Image (cartoon, rainbow over all chains, first blue to last red; front, top):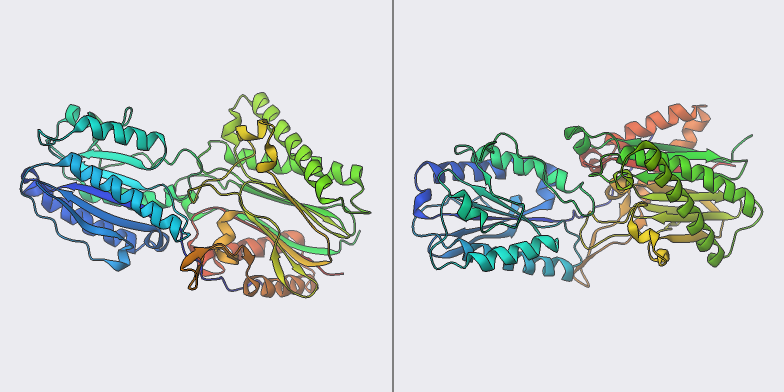
Length: 219
Length: 278
C-alpha cells in the first residue's frame, strides 16, 4: 500500500488589508454588525487550515485620524479588535495608508524570499470623504495600482453611502459593491471562502468569486 | 512485452475545485513504447480558464503523439542527444503540440487561451531521461545510489500563482527558449516522479526557512521520506499482481488524503511515480 511523510513547507502568503470607516455615522447598528462580522471572519479563517496559514490580515481604521489597528498577521497571531465609531471621514488618507502598507509588505516578502499572492485591499464605508480629502489623487493611484496588477481593490458601500461619491474613488469599471442591510457577517464569510479561490486563480485574472447574499443586486 | 518500469499515476480533483463546481483540470498519461522506453506527460489546466480541463486532456494526447514520433525519428532508443540538440528538438516538438492545440481550438470554435495549461514531458530511454516543460510543476529522479534530485525548475512569476502556459503569446515570439526548459539525465535512474504544483507541498522541499540567511527558499528537492516508502509500496503491489488500473486507483486514494498536505490541498493534484523493476 502507499504511504509516506510530507515535508514541512511554509505556505505562500496572501495579504488582505481591511480599510474600515469608524466615523460617527457608523455608530449604532453598523459598527455593532461590523464588529460581529470581523469576529466571524477570524473564526472562519481559523477553521480553514490553508486559509489560516496563507491569509495575513491587516486592519486600518479612519475617522479624523488614521490608525493601523492591526499589522499584517496570521489569524492565530492576533485577537480581532473591537471598533468604536466617532469623528469625521478621512477616507482618502486611510486608503493611502493601506497602499503604503501593501508596498512595504510586498518588499518584505521579497527580501525574505517568501512567495505571495496578489494583495487584496477592501474599503468599507458608509460616508463621504471629508471636504479636504483629495479624491482625484486617490482614484488615480488606485487605477494605476490595479492596472499594474500590484493589488486587487474592492470598495463596499455600507447603508446610507453615496454611490456616486464613492464611485469617484474607485478604479474605472470597478464601482463600489453595496452591502445589503448590515450583512457584514455574510460579507466576511464570503471573503473567507474566497481565499482558497484566489490561491487557485492563475496568471492575470486574480478575480474574487462573484459576491453572494451580502451584496444588493440593484444599485 | 515486459516493461521494465512500474508506474503509478493519477490526477485527482482538489477540494477547492469541488467547492467551486469546477472539474479536475489536471491530466496525465504514461505510454510504454518497448521494454525500456516510455513517455510520461502531465498537464495542469489554468484554474481560471473556461476550458482548461479540455486543454489539459488534449495537450496530453498531442504530446504523446508528437514525442513518440520524435523518439522513433531520433532513435533515442539507441542513444541520448546532446543538450543542445535536445533543447532544439524538444522546442520544435512542444511548438507542434501547441499548433495542434491551436487548430483544435479553431475547430471547436473556442478561444485558444481558454485551453491554457502547463505541460511537462519525460522521455524514458535506456540510457537516461529526457525532460522538457512549459510552466510550473516538478520533476525529479532517484539515482541508482538512492539520491533524489530535481530535473526541472518550475517557471514562476512574481506572484505565487503565476506561471506561463502553452497558449502564452510569448511562445509565438522568437525568444521561446526563455519559456521552455529541457534537460537530460544521462545516468542510470532507479525511479522518477512528475507532478503538478498541487502536489508539491506534499512531496517536495519547496518552501523552507534558512536560519543562516534568514530567508525562505525553494530547495526544489523531492522528499525521500515521501517517495521511498511509495517505491516499496509499488514493488509490493506488483508482487500481488495488481493491474495498472488497480494500482492507479490505490494511488488516487492516497493522493486524496494520504498525508496532511495532500488532504488540505485545494488545487487539483497529479503525481506520477515510476520505478525500474528489472
